[in-house]
Length: 244
Image (cartoon, rainbow, N blue to C red; front, side, top):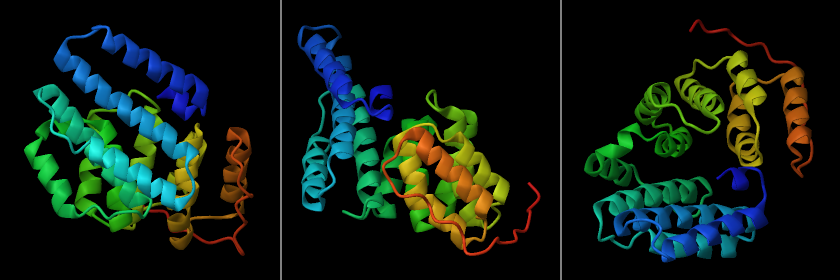
């Protein structure tokens, strides 16, 4: 996944191909191999998604991988992995505006597969889905999971992100919460999501000022994102500091 985060598509494709070849030669028991193949499908989807921008092509990409992750697996481990990948895909599809993910499906998957309760990857995606739809109880659960089961990759940055999402929905976010998330940005997908999905809500909440905007643009240049600078706010907004 680091190759995707680091925006190295050639290296990523090489690693995926190498892993698939290793599985084809029996590197793992059959049940483990089936689960790993699904994970490789997910990495392949993320790589293709980063390279695909035309809406019709993106819609086809989502449809292709939704079909893959809808196929029941013969082994219990692979079946759990399939549901994980399916939920992650549906969260992203909803976030990108291609197909809504109803709350009923989220609840059903969580109830049928309790192992996802301790999965920080799942709850990172669910947090963003809940943020978009103002599902506060899901954000509360995501917040708890990120405290008790921190992510192994970019763990602090992901916790700060979920904390900000939760506090924005709860109406208790502060300028310091926003600043901490901006400082924590390290990789392109993370920063693109923040600028496109979270920053506007921070602006609407009156938490953005010229200094924060300058810091965000510095991060944009540091990570080398080909986007125009984030515009400065028309005037500095006063914020109410909420006790934690």
